[in-house]
Image (tube, rainbow, N blue to C red; front, side, top):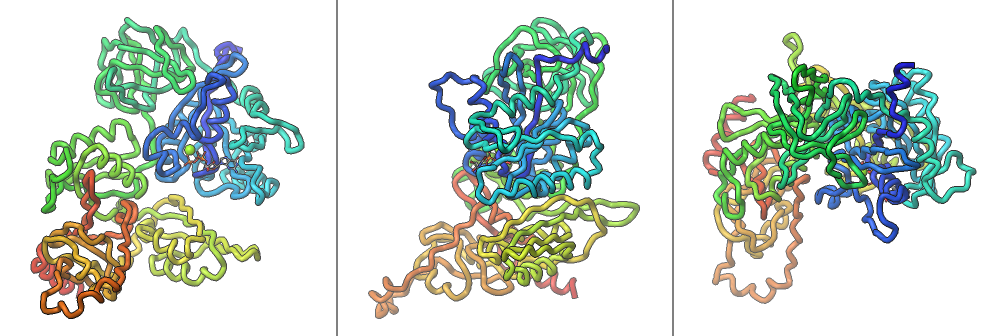
Length: 614
Ligand SMILES: Nc1nc2c(ncn2[C@@H]2O[C@H](COP(=O)(O)OP(=O)(O)OP(=O)(O)O)[C@@H](O)[C@H]2O)c(=O)[nH]1
Ligand SMILES: [Mg+2]
C-alpha cells in the first residue's frame, strides 16, 4: 500500500534497446512526431536523435540520448540507445534510468547477438519488457518464427516466468504504425503508446525523502559549462538551495546549481524545481563525473556508482613525431593530448586512459575497435594530431595464468563461402561451434575465437564473401592465452625518401602490390604507401621521375593506365596496421608509417627479432 502511494502515475521512463539497425531511432522519430511534441507544420528530420555528425555519417547511434514526450497527460521519458556492440556501455548506463524497456527485434533478422546482450542486462535489472517486432512490412518478415526465437532467448537467459510473459506489439517504425495484434487495422503508434502506459509502471519515487541524484550522462554547453543528466531518485532539487556532491573520494558540500532542467521533446526546459522519478539535467557544479551523486547538503548519502563491463581492447596514443607533424593540426603537444583524453573519460565511462612509462604515450582502453575509431575521428575533427598503434586485447592474470578475451562470432554467409571463411578463422584460432544449413543457399556458422584473432578480420571477411556475408560478434568471457596468432601475411610498401609521388614510379609498382596513395601525395621516408603482394616490407622510391634518356618511350606513357589507389578509411587503417606501424592522424590526413622511420635501423631491428625467435 505504501509503495503504491509513492508510484508516480503521470510519468514513465523507458529505454529502447535492440541489435544494431533494428529501428530504434526510427521508432523514436515516430513517437516524437505523433505525440504532438512538434508543431503540425514542423518538419523533423529522419533519425533526429542521431544528432552527432558521426552518427549521421555512419547511420548508427553512438551515444545514448533522452527525449521526453507527452501522451494523454502522461510524460514519457524515452532513452534511445546504440545497438552496436562497442557502445554496449551506453546501454548498461541507460538502464539505470528507466522502469522498463522496449525490446525491438527485426521481423526478418530475428534476435541477434546484441539483442542477447541488451536483454541480459535488462533482465538482470528485472525491468519489465515489451517486445516490439519491427519492420513487419519487410517482404521477408517471418514474424511467428522470430517470436519463437525471442522466447527461446528469454529461456536461455534464465528469465523468470514473470519476465517471459511479455506483451508483444508489431510495428513499422518507418511508417509510424503499430498494432497490438497483426490483424488489427492501425495507421498510427497509438497501440504502442497504450501498451507502454499500461505495462510499464511509473517510477517509485518520494519527493519527501532527502534528494539523491545519480549522474548518469554528461553534456557540455559553452554557456553554462558541464551539464549532468540523470534520474532524480528521490526528493526534490531546487534552485538557490545547497547540496552535496559525492564523488568517488570525497563529499563536497555547499554546491549550488546555475540551472535546472526537465526535458520536453528534444529541448531542455529551465525550471526552478525538479521532482523525483523524472529524468532531469542540471548545471553549475564543477568537476563532476558519471557515477557521482548529488545529495542532501547536511546528510549526504551517495547511490551505488555505475558498474560497467570492463574494456577489452586498447590502443596506444602517441604524440605525433612524424616529419610532417604540425602542418595542419591545432593541438599537438603531450599536454593537449593528455587533457583531451582525460576529458573523454569524464563523459565516457566505458573508456579508460592510462599514462604509460613514457610521458608522451597514453594507453586508451575501450570496448572495441569501432569505439576507439570514433574517438580518433572525433579528436581529429577537433584539430588534434597524434599517432595510434595497432589495437591490442587486454589480457587478465588469474592466479598466474594469462587469460585473454574471447568472442562468439555469428556468420550468415553464402554456402559456397563456408570453406574459405572457416579456413581463415581457424588460422586465427577460431573453433566452429555450430553450423546450420537451412537449404536456402545461405549458411549460419558460429565460432568461438580469441578477440585477438578478430582484429583485422572484418575486411578480409568482406572480400572473401564478396560483400555478401553478415558478421556479428559478442564478448564471451576469458580463456587461457592461445599462443601466437599469425598477423597480416603481406608486407608494406614503404617510401625510402621524402618527396612527391610520381605517376612514373606508380606504374613501375603495379605488379608489386596495391598502392594506398594517389599521384602527387607528399610522402616521407618510412611512410607506408601500399600493401605488398607478398610477405616482408619493400622499400621503394615512389618519387622517381623519368630520366631524359628514356624519352624514347614518351608518348606511349600516357596510354599506360595507373591502377587507382586503394584509399583506406580510418577503420581500414586500424584493421591493416601491424605491430611495428603507426597510423598518423591529423585533421587533414590519415597516413600510415613504420614506427622506425630509418630504413637501416628498421632492418637491424628486424634482423634481431628474427634471430630472437629462432
Ligand atoms: N522497412 C523498414 N525499415 C525500417 C523500419 N524501421 C527502421 N527501418 C530502417 O532501418 C534502418 C536502421 O534504422 P535505425 O532507426 O537507425 O536503427 P537503430 O536501431 O537506431 O540503429 P543503431 O542505433 O545504430 O543501433 C534505417 O534505414 C531505417 O529506415 C521499418 O519498420 N521497416
Ligand atoms: Mg539508433
